Structures are given as C-alpha cells and as structure tokens.
Image (cartoon, rainbow, N blue to C red; front, top):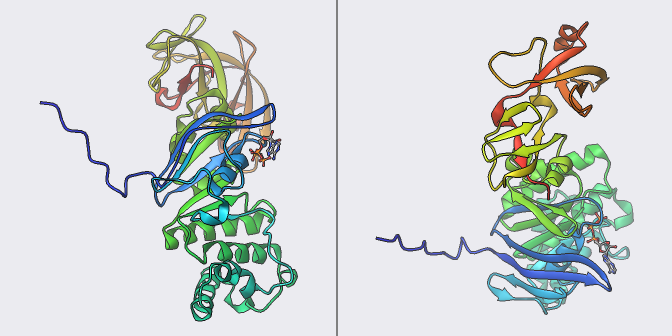
Length: 363
Ligand SMILES: Nc1ncnc2c1ncn2[C@@H]1O[C@H](COP(=O)(O)OP(=O)(O)OP(=O)(O)O)[C@@H](O)[C@H]1O
C-alpha cells in the first residue's frame, strides 16, 4: 500500500516563497531564474560576493524592486505588486537611514504613527522595542548624538516595533568596526530568538554567515548554488564556487568513475558524492584535514608532494606543498608543535580521512 503524502501544516508552509523569479536591469540579467522557500521563524542568510544579486533579491521581498518575472508570496498571499508599506516586512539598511531631526523615540514611533496607532500604544511599543536593543536610556537623543552601533540599534528598534512577519537586514553591520560587529552579531541572534520572527540577512562575510544563520543561501551570479545549514555548507560544499567562497579549500581536478576519484595513477576513495555524475570532477579538501606523511603509507592512497614553503598564522602554520605529479599547490594547516617534525623533509605523501573530502562536478 502506498503511504499517503504527509499533510503540510501551516507551520511547515514556507513563510516567504519566491517562485520562478527573474530580474534584469536593462540588458543586465541579474537573476536568471530563482526559486526560494524561506521557513517560518528561521534566520536565513543570503551570502555571496559583491554584485551577485543579494540586495536585489532582498529588495524584491521588501517591495523596493519588482521582479521582471515570477511571484513573491508571503504566508501564501501573492504580494508581488504590493508597495513596501503594504507588506508585513521591514528592512534594516547598512546606513541606518534614521531621520536626523527626530529623536530616538520619534524615529522608532514614526511608522506606528503613519499606521494610525494610538499615542498610548505607541509609547508602550516604542519603549519595549528600545529596551530590546538596550537603547531605552537614549530615547530623547538625536541620531547625531549616537555612535554608529547605537544608531544601528535604533534602526533595528524601528524595524521591529510593529512586529513584522519578516525582518530584512541588508548588511546591517558592515559599517561597524570588528569588535562592535562581533558584539552586534550576538545581539542580533539574541533578538531573533526573543522575537521568533523570520530574519533574512544579507552579507558577503562568510564568517558572519556561518556564525549567525540557521541556513545559508550561497549566491553566485544570481543563482543559489547551495541552500543548507552552515555546517553542511562548510563541510559539504556542492559546487566549486561554494568550496572556494566558504573558508579555504584545496581543489583537485580529476575523474570520477562512479565510485572512486582518479588522478592519473592515483585512485582516491570518496564517499561524499551525492549527485556527482561520472566524468570530470573536482575534489575539495580543507587544509586542516590534509595529513602529511613522511613515509608512503602502505594501506591507503597518497599523493607525493614537495614541501615548498610555510606561512605563520598565529595559532597555526600553513604548509605549502606542491604535488609531484602535476605541480598543483596544496595547503596544509598544522599546529605550531607539529612543525618541527617536518624539518628536513622535502618529499612527503599527502592524504586525508576519506569522509572529509567532497566531490562535485564543475558548475
Ligand atoms: N537599480 C539598479 N539599476 C541597474 N543595475 C542595478 C540596480 N541595482 C542593482 N543593479 C545591478 O545588479 C547587480 C547585483 O547588484 P546587487 O546590489 O543586488 O548585488 P549584491 O550581491 O547585493 O552586491 P553588494 O554586496 O556589492 O551589495 C549588479 O551588477 C548591480 O550593478
């Protein structure tokens, strides 16, 4: 007997759905064809290099841009042609965009006033929102009397005060210095947990994406190459672009025969090969997973290599190796206390735990 399909409950239905979205500016096709389902309550990050279309995508959810084709759905409702103020979403921008002539409270109250919320309710909601971002003590200051981090907190309070269904964040921390940025990352995560609303966060900073997100959509020229949890994106990159963009990876070209990966004479066992077609393929292995053997191991594969250089990185050294067969470079991360064991060796044999490598066809 066939098992009946699972019933989709309201909580499982995606909160935001982008259906067959396309976007061009004149002849510049920024988003060729994109589908994306954003889960209710998740912290989703759009990650990718400058110009890949992250902001354009976010602005289409916000309503500041109209797709050239396709639909935007919020909670099942088609909002494609609704103006921003009629959508139950708010945006926080990199440059804060506060009204300079209004004090902190009035900045946060502005939207509520526009929507006709009564004064007493307004005061209470503003107070609550400011308290959530620890800015209640600055309620009567003007934006120019605040630091960048404080202004961004006010912008956040303004965006959450009416409890939108989705909070869109367009590189909100990019203008802050590193220390403050780290602190605000944590605060944003806390805010997300407290509010329980859906966050869609844009960044080109992979570390920020890895630490903050429930899921990351890695974008490459308007295409989502991979949409997964941070650990999956990091440990199992599905394309060469993702492997290069997230953290550091050694990339080795070769041939996949359906079971093993071959480079000339060397046969390398692989296990992480979902959707990899036989033929030309790339193996990705992180520097921290490569093992330098001084003798050729008898029981497993090994790639002969020369040690050609080293770079000090504080808590680790990066050892640069050149593969004997091809001249390609492989970097290996070692701890400082492991370094002296390599002295005097020029030819070594590289391998790695089979499960640590990922394979992909070039895309
Ligand atoms: N209003 C516009 N008119 C014309 N071209 C635009 C417009 N907005 C964006 N673009 C183009 O669309 C492409 C994607 O831009 P977008 O701002 O979405 O990228 P991004 O990934 O957010 O980059 P960044 O990290 O630099 O902000 C770029 O080539 C950009 O020049």
